Image (cartoon, rainbow, N blue to C red; front, side, top):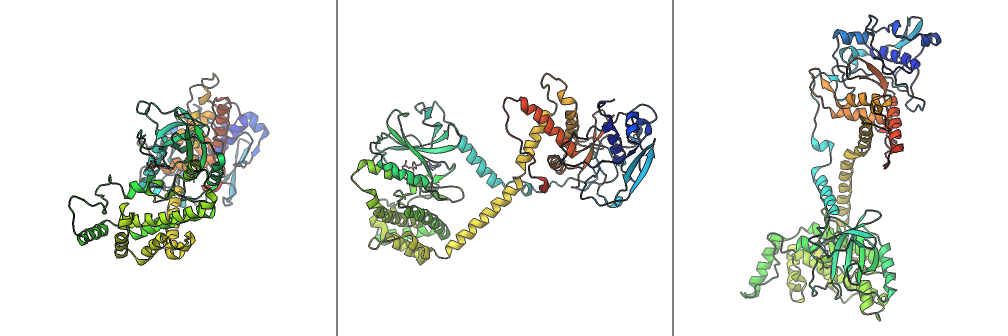
Length: 627
Ligand SMILES: Nc1ncnc2c1ncn2[C@@H]1O[C@H](COP(=O)(O)OP(=O)(O)OP(=O)(O)O)[C@@H](O)[C@H]1O
């Protein structure tokens, strides 16, 4: 069978390669009868040429070996015929160690040690061979023991611990959960009134039940609702907060919007844009924010009656009046049993003060520091949401007020709101901050937490003095370092997790390229496109990488082998491997560099005529040093 008849000079090198493929201690001779005469005439002394991995010339991979029926068969083919060797090949791999060698031709030029060469004259052509370096010590034995696609099962593949190879389950689930939430689509039957498009956004999905109760007017008398939406052009998900029935008559407030849009901080939900729309059938004002899937409000997280076992300790049953001391003891007992860890409260304080610091230094005020307007994610990251709305809405309702003049007042209100929030968290009660309950609540804090926490709350609640967020820093003290340390540790562990997966995209793109080429039914009306030329090589390579079998013919699934082969293909190393045709009649000796060239060439052909072409061109870029 001569399926690569068109390049005789290549055939010569191929023969040489095959001779080297039989790189066993007992050297194999190349039968002179298989060397074409027209090549001999020009090359009576032949020295194997160096194959550079970056060679742009036509690759030297067409090393096919027609196996003649005559007596002058190549020794390796002869061995195959005689059944001396198994009819498959061993995978080229160094991990785990193979007891039998793969038919790998190590031509790692540049880093291979200089070994003595010997020469042999065959039919007038001189062949130069290099002795094998320390054959006994090699992890991989001689080729004569094996042929492509077979492994011996004297060892077991190290399956390893799942977690040591892949992202931890917790992180994976968290990410998947967020992805699912981001992709949620509304049921049109459940929400028939939802507009198809609102300005540059579509796929609106309500983040809370749409209230038709006009009494629920959280934003200075305006009803509001929240939607997840997708930007039509970029596909990015955002949060739209709609203020119902709002008509903007004064554009002065848009100066605040510009200031808020510029404010970027890890503890605030960034405002992206503000616009008016009639898409909902009324005059609505839309505030577009970053979307943080999986977030919940602080109210839901810590004060929700829907949580099992939660009830507000300050909620008295009026039908059973009891002496004050009894109630207080009850409160204390309840708080002791249910209190939040102090470290968590300080964690929140550091994040909230950090956000307030940046807001106040931009001459703005939050004005919505409320458990319903602070969102928290699964890693306890707090973000102030709803920023900028009050500036717009209040400007409208009372346009005579100068916001700039009042900003300091609002900032003081922010600090009071922070004091109440910390008190509520320490007592696990939103009712604790009611005027009648504050002294009892502070008493509870004194008994349950350190004086530092009480002092901070007292400072924030004392309205006699002018307070500043920067004054809180000494009260936080060394806890700041603990927070920083925790964050660094978290970053490091995420970095470790990321490093496990960092190669996946590259390998996936490589496999995608192979899969789009291999056994493609037809291309450009050529029914044999996937079976001839470059593609044939890739098909055999696919068998070599993925279809290894044991000597008994059982599938051999070794991820290390697969990944190693793909990495070498991606880089295009000069190392050579033997590929065997499926009928086991022919063997090709081919380098990864040549295979890479085939892949690029064939994929280039496909991509150039494809209707859609996703850019996979960066496959392999800069990975040489990552093997
Ligand atoms: N930027 C955001 N990204 C993701 N989810 C958010 C974002 N902002 C708010 N949410 C979620 O949307 C839902 C509704 O938020 P909203 O601020 O309206 O809370 P609320 O308690 O319903 O307050 P209100 O009384 O103003 O309606 C909450 O579950 C909240 O977690």
